[in-house]
Image (cartoon, rainbow, N blue to C red):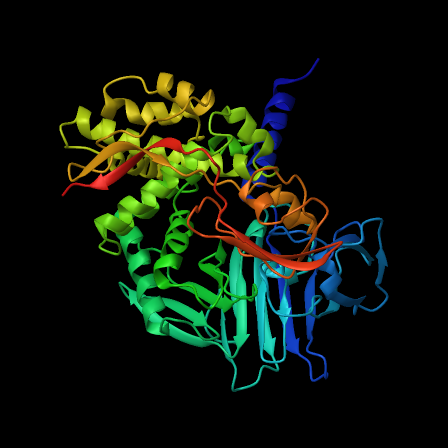
Length: 558
């Protein structure tokens, strides 16, 4: 028979154990990096990483592998070795994983070298690989930082010490504008979300309510450094004011030129921790870059600050990407960065692209399945979600006689998320909308978002100064399998009677050199060089189908 005293003692011990588990969470992992520019003739950098090894005496080290569409990133990592006495490093079945055998819990130091693993100019297809040139570097953390394998949510403290950089070089990265020893604390998942540039960059600093924004640029452009920095400052200011959130202490934007051949026009980029990496051909414009920057910067709040994305998160991309696209241009217009005419033009382009998308009526399940596999599926949640957001804003304004808008709903979500992270689901969005639309939004979400029925833009979506009409528009049609060409450089699926066929494009030809493609733009010709059995030839044509399509389009009232 168990005594009452024994039961009380057991309960006390259990309570103490539970209390201790909350009081002593998983220890913070400390990672110390020293990055040194070598004096070798070939540009390369020595990385030294120190950390505490696992208690069982075996620690796996993950080298950069896949990120941003790049694969085998470990090929830029050379001469990996362990510096700790008596510790041994060995290969594993996976080329990007090494295993260090050591004394239990021992402090470990490893060393490796970083070299550029591609030749020629920086192009789109290699833009996320680490650049290691004599006159500059451009690194995204995911592509250069080796690390011990830890859980994504584990807390870490990381330090970065930079050595051997020429005094004439300019330096800037996510953590600051100087190559001093930098210390940061964050979840492990944030380690790779950094950008570091150094070399022949020019840095302009602007401020929003006292907080610095550094804009690091290299190369020659058709705009001034001040023009780009001014646009960045205004985009950041507009969005921080919208959310009433000026908590971000610093921000960095980098811009490097890419070479895509003769007369191309291309730009892209990626949002990182407190930073944004831009790439563009030298003929890019500030007006062209502002939409990309505004979209990515809005992701500082949508979706992370509005709630928790479900798994798989593609099922809610209509919210995270579509609503972001809506606010990208709505806020640029409201903030005076673009005119009403420019705003209408941006919206029309996306409505046109949506109506001409072969996948426009695919259900949301198709997005979950093929978002990363099919370009047309990947565009669908952006376009469908943007038009849904426009219509929802119009519905809220109508139901409230202009007293409320979609702004009120998303700000409610923002405030609620500060208290408790709500999973972002269709029913949760319908719940937030209910008080503003005066009814249940779920049937509309089910019809247009879940089942994929075509969404028609609300005529009142852009305000009383804009009208909606249906016009016949040319359909963008490349006339061949353009994705196959981009992946393999081989021409395939040429459609007889298409503009591509009339221009001389044939199956089996090979792409020579670069190509610039403005997807959905029926006013920009496709031009590139191919080689075949009859030698090389240049082809150029407007990618337009023979039959037009009726599409809703907005216009400014005269």
